[in-house]
Length: 412
Image (cartoon, rainbow, N blue to C red):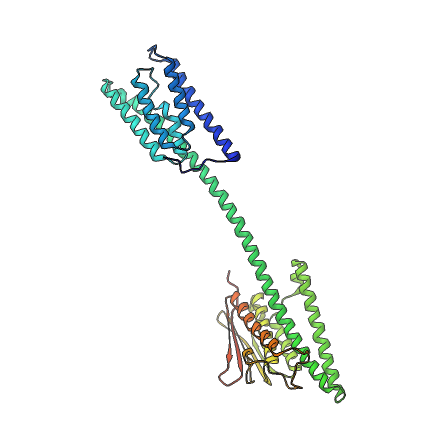
């Protein structure tokens, strides 16, 4: 009949032992004082009676560990006490502390059962003695019931308050853990976003630089004007990329600088189209969306998806023309990037732009393939985080098509 509440250790254990000792002492002294008072003048306040008082207190010391056992022994001890014709001490008083502790540790049924036995036996004994029913019901029975009920109610109340405090502490702990996890998730999401932005922006810039470098390498000595224009484009692309890298580094050093950085959006699609045109790809741009209709994060994601799609066309396709369309249908932003090449799918391998047929950086085709695959995966991840999706595949009329659907507003 053990308690369902483990005994504490450390400081909590010391506190429990101290309260148990105080409760046991109080129980023993109370019974001893009633014995000494001998209200009925029996003159039987012997040493044995006081030993019972000590015993009632001693049982309380074990009530936390074995409340059921202690209650049974307490009830038996009360019956034994009265069988020895000792001074009356009341039927409920010697059991008050044990009843309280049993309820306090969760053994409420044991406490209720013991209380019922004590009150029932006491009432039966009084009736057998010929005590007037009116007196029994109006005073003695009522007093006993009130005493045991108060002890049990107090124990239940203390237990409930303790459990409430424990629940609040667990809630605070869980909240702190969840906040730490949420911070880690946000940090990871920010890392992924920065990685995607770097991949998209750097990959686009490097593709433009590589293409113009290829042109410059082929035309130096034959068409110096074309070579100079190609080198100028390389310088412009490099400068723009350096500015973006500096802004990214500044953001990493100080998150508060994010607002100063400015977020790319649909307004930047014209610049992307111009860069692609300068690299030799004819781009038709049709944007029928007001920037104010989109959340900032949606506009930035749309920009990156178009940027990566055009980069893939430049790196992986023999296409000469691409079309970029953006429009709103209901609460969804739709982007379509289509080219007229045989394929711009990374799985088909890199297809160099017209030129000398090799990559000027000396890289392998597998590098391009891996980059293209990562780009498509990054687009899908970027869209999925915002509640959208990206599909990519061969178009019905040939070429390759990227179709992205994004919400115009972030979910609350």
